[in-house]
Image 1: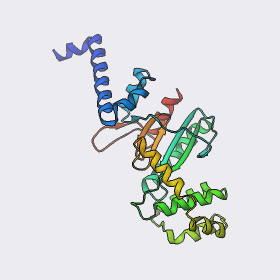
Image 2 (image 1 turned 30 degrees about the horizontal axis):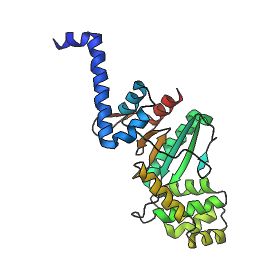
Image 3 (image 1 turned 90 degrees about the vertical axis):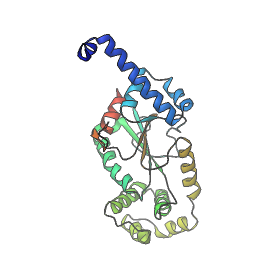
Image 4 (image 1 turned 45 degrees about the vertical axis):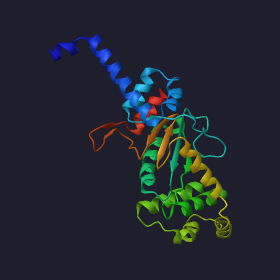
Length: 243
């Protein structure tokens, strides 16, 4: 009887639509129905279903890329990815490998904006993110970022070595010391963190592909989590938005 029930394609279609609606309602209930509804209203049912099926969320009110961002790629790229990261975090270091694969795969079709999420709960977080912002003054943000994440991967990151790190990438130490002593970019870090939390960013990495929010160090390829649930990889998420 069950087999004959699912042989009727019309019944199966109705079942799938009901299933998708139930999943969407669950997302509404957990993540703020009114906020998400404004985004859903602009999307087709197929697009909503894709996001829900991927295990992701929809964000409303996200600040788009602007001149205050540090961006890798062209601002007019087809796909815009915003990454909230902490350069003292292992999970941000892990996700950086996925970002490298995305850049290799789609090249100029993607632009990536890096936004620091410095958390005082973690001992190195504020100091190293301040240091990277000061390095950006000298045009060395990406060199600083790469060095810091490499140190995280080796489990050897220490704020005591910031002077040595600066020498490795050719920073003017006097300018860096002055920038750090004045905590010049602390208001910027606090503003970005506060802004991010208004649209439910509470940890790193948190990634936005257009208005689709991905929480955690999502792998490049599709994976299965510890609960046996399939998670869509960043590769397929990017291509879904490209198409």
